[in-house]
Image 1 (cartoon, helix red, strand yellow):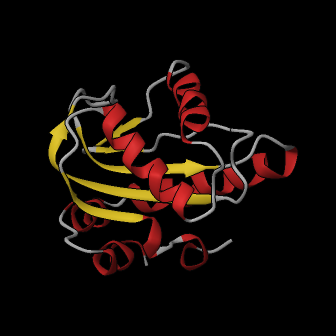
Image 2 (image 1 turned 90 degrees about the vertical axis):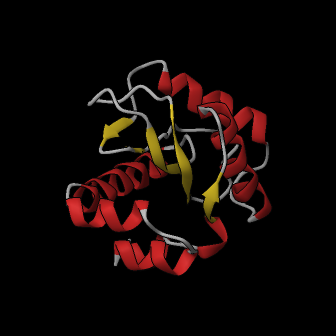
Length: 149
């Protein structure tokens, strides 16, 4: 699995005006539903919140990577949102979040492998301050892709 294979411009949204974690998760889940990655928004988000309850997904630097295994995932996908304003989120550095990378992975054994690959792939990229800066300043889908590749 390569970054270029997983990045899908149909699953990216910039200039978002969400005011809460719930709003941003719903907006990104709508993209996943429209693209055929998930079959039910509320069921999927319930599974994301179950994972959120286990520990924070805000990795610091204004970025969060919410994720969770869900039976409502039909096809692995990554929805990426860039919010205009910082929103409250449980993070490692105590700051809010502007960049949200929402993983949609199934709940079977094969999906678990994909899940770990995705986490590792994005964690490597997001460990680079320049990648994060470019991501948070992205004004369109092309700029998001450019930040990661």
